Length: 72
Image: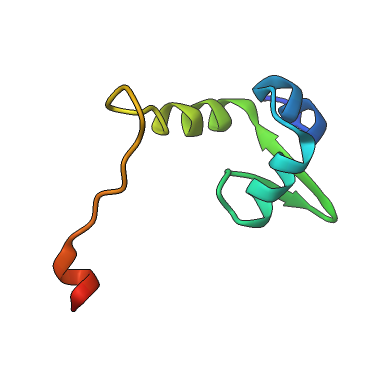
């Protein structure tokens, strides 16, 4: 069975601050498992999550929205 990663291990793997990992779990942005008071991650699920966030276009991202929904 696949090993579970700690927030520290995940932050090192993704090269982000550990506080960022906790923010992502707190906002349920990142897939995680709660084991008692501990938070853990499956590496394969994290890499799938990363792949889903691949940008389709290059350059600066823009916000696109329907103006009718704003004026609505």
